[in-house]
Length: 449
Image (cartoon, rainbow, N blue to C red):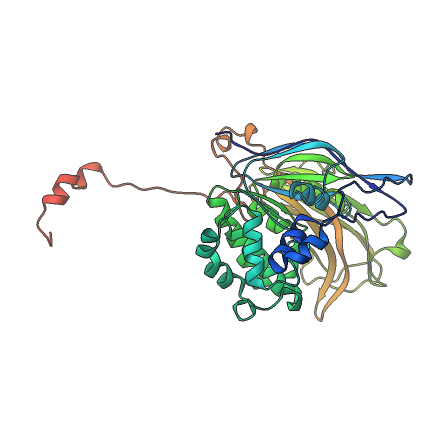
């Protein structure tokens, strides 16, 4: 059996800008739903002749163009990118909701999709009926769905309303049931869009745990999300899509880090040459913040083994204040991983004169984990405690772990989770071999000895 789960070759999707020509053809889900409700309604919905929608002469836009990639069985792939990049269009094509304009898609096995709210369920059918409809569309027998029904309903938390038409569900109830159906009907490929953002925090965690379980079963998952924490947690690999094309394809943490730095437009240096618009007040103003290496050079990429300095240049305009420079560090998920203050004795509890100061916080090597960091910088006074100036998104940089440059590190494969990656000192002790009883002695030794 081939290890290939999904193959996309030269995929393109073109939309018309201008006059809308809506197709009058019913979708397969609508036809089947009507068949369950009324055979007469089914006959009324079927057109006398199937024909494509008229082609407009208006201008066109390519939502996707030249997209190609392969996904192997059991792989979890995150798809990230800015709004309007073509991510949802790609998933709709993979889910067979819309057809491509060019290229081809090859999928091996059942596909279950969870896209935007409203896709997949028939509003007039109850939750229970929609479960059976979804299973039938996946090619499952009724007996198979029967075995999964209780588990699906219990996971969704909508048991009280399972025999109510889903048009009366809230968006959260709808999503909980839709995800439960998609995840429990044992698809070979599970496709999930940003729809999980609709659920509450507890259910989002439940969904993430379920997707990890689906992955452990050897199934393939394609996940589109702006929640980069979910992407780095679940996915080993990520695709960065922008302008309808795959811009990058690689390890999830690396792709997410690159995307965040580029999308947030952070650089390793930020200056305010005009004091009138610089962060601060009449006591002090920030002049520059930058990331530098041991040689004093500004750097956007830092080797995990090398120390890195965060340099702040600021003007003290009004003398006589005790000032404390500080930096706060945020990882790519927006989590503040730590804050550092200047507590060195040189200026601790000492009022500063009017002058320009340069303060540098040095982060040792083998401390930060791989990924992107954004920095806030500021000045505060301790007595009384007042933040005199603060700039939340001052600079950013990326930490990389070049395993090939460290023979010891090269023997450890795969990224480590966590917001820091300290290289701790380990000690190991062992007892002399002759002091330990042999396995035979342990088996034949009388009890209590």
